[in-house]
Image (cartoon, rainbow, N blue to C red; front, top):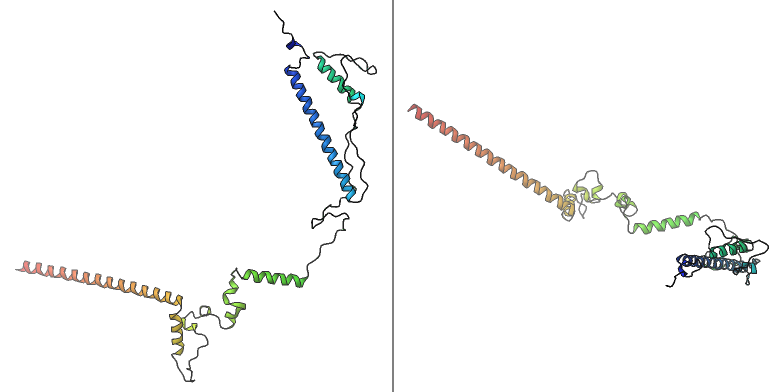
Amino acid sequence: MPLHLLGKKSWNVYNAANIARVRRDEAAAQAREEADEQRMQEADAARRLAILRGEIPPPLQGPSSQPSPDALPPSRGHHDERAGRKRKRHGEDDTDFEMRVARSRASPHAPPASKPAPSSSSAPLVDSRGHIALFSAPPQPPREPHPEAAREAARKDRELKDQYQMRLVNAAGRDGAGLTDGGPWYASAEGEVSAAAPGVTDKNVWGRDDPGRRDRAAARMGASDPLALMQKGARMVRELEKGRRREVEEREREMGEMEREERRERKRERRREERA
């Protein structure tokens, strides 16, 4: 009967712990490569920016192309004589032991992480128009607007808004001409239709007195005025309602008188019958 001892070995490549360890190591190596690539790109960008600005570019600092022999993983059975013989810990298999030895040997000789040299100038690379500025211009103080230019801009803005906005001051007409020339008929204190004919005198075209001229002019203007027509219609409706109420009251009064007269007649008839 064959014995299946391969799954019991700690160095079995198909063991779940070994597979997880390999995947973890691959992820860590990929993260280190991405960090090195990002660091190299930042250093390259800093050098290009310094060259464009006419400054001394910082020196390149990157990992050496050939790894040191101390950073190589040691082979099985090979140990550093200077560090002494390493021993396994309790519950540690061969793979964990070799990985620990490799990390302990590589950590003292690992190169320090290089950082891009900070730029000596904080001037922006692009100007206000979007062009690359190799020589930064000195900052200019903000300019104060000219008073006449500000007034002209405010006047143009007001004229533009007057085209689609309505204000209460515009009710009198352009530049208040409606109030200076006597105002419209509804702006008078009397509030009568006769005030709707400003400038009309009591004389005719021949200079003779015509007392009814003002009333006729007011009547003509009132006949063509929609508001006057509405007021006239409302007045006629009120008068019609008053007439209807008056007719109803008269009819009720007549009916009441007729009923009282009938009651009197019945009383008289009753008295005559009693006497007879």
